[in-house]
Picture 1: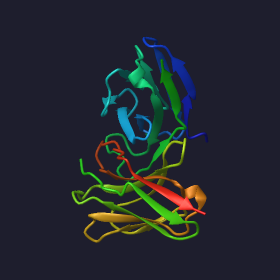
Picture 2: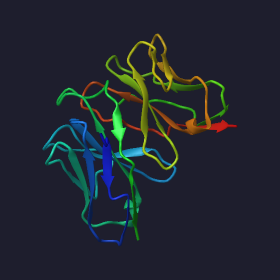
Picture 3: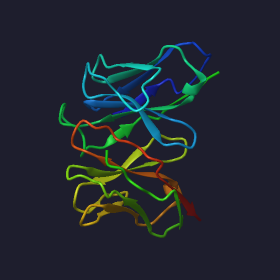
Length: 118
Length: 110
């Protein structure tokens, strides 16, 4: 049971390049989330998903797109990277039945992806 | 969304108990109180959560005030490994994601 895994662990991009971050979970969780964390700051929600085939915007969605084609995977895409997107990206998953969210369920986080955009 | 208020930082001596406070005066009846912590250079990890009653697990205890407007995370014997940022978060039973604030940075002194 690997929990939540993230690929890649580190990446350096040039401004304007694109990339996709992959998050995978093996706990059969309905809910998945993408956060970013800038130095010395708390986590901010980018996008989330409440089930396979669904996505929703979080607090800071601009410049990012997501897809949840399979229940176990949640992809975060940067179409045209900017230096302001330099950050550590965390993925999380959470249990709970679809449509009846997880107030009483804990989130499990991946180890993070450190992205630098030059 | 109901908000939480935590001290920016706290300090504790190793092997002593630590009480981390959290105020959430606008909590609603369906909000669960969650605590997470983030060790240096790692992702957040779940610590404990509760709704109305006090809760204990292998990591910590959660004491919830009778009016639910505040709670306290209790680490019974702080170790150096407990040095982290601790987040107190409210999570409703609807489709509402967790919202992380800045948390409390706990330093543990040997």
